[in-house]
Image 1 (tube, rainbow, N blue to C red):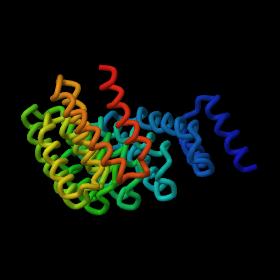
Image 2: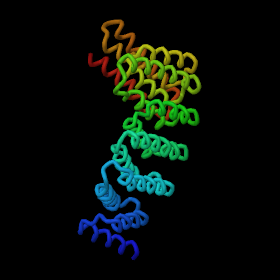
Image 3: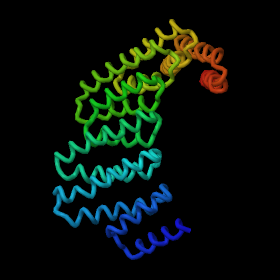
Image 4: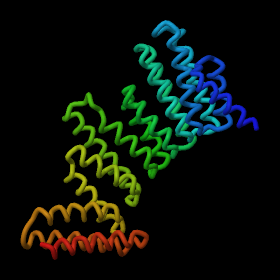
Length: 299
């Protein structure tokens, strides 16, 4: 009954176009009852905008409603940090606050860094928090901080795919960096990936990262060398073997005659090696083997 009555009040407020303080408070009551209520979050943002627009642009007074809203999201996150409505709302608030000047922008970057880090150290697989953090890194230029933070989380769990993805975004989306700088960063990251491969050659997350970094930096030969060393040390390292098999397929497609046949045979052998040790992905490895055979027959 309370739920129905509270929502009825919200619908009445929305129908009247009211964005007052009491309307703002009402959205909080609705969200407390149902945090997934899109209408409540959307109207709350309209109320915040109305509160800001009625004050001097860029003033401390104008920033007050936004700062209060950040505190609201932080308190709400303690109850449900996986509500995507929360993160969407916080992004709107943060962006509006950052637009109020350089000082506000610096404060906003530091706050998002600290807030998302606290959430992720509590739950490193919260993909809503990761998505928000990736945005904040780009919006506030926190790439260097992100490299340190993701290294810390990878140290805690080297198979944290979200941390690897965030690191990849921070490295490859540095628009201000020159091509030579990006190439240097990519080379350093590939070395970092190799260090992680040495710790666990079966870690799929690091191999996915190494593939992406090698592609971004034009370091395909270096990736092959890493995979080759990994297979020599760990013959059952299927992710390393599949890297070599993929390159062998590319070589086969770009060659002719005996060279083509040798490369295709190499790819087939590597996929067969993966099939022998990885029963869970047996259908996939079988498909890759047969795909290569069909390609040879078609030619």
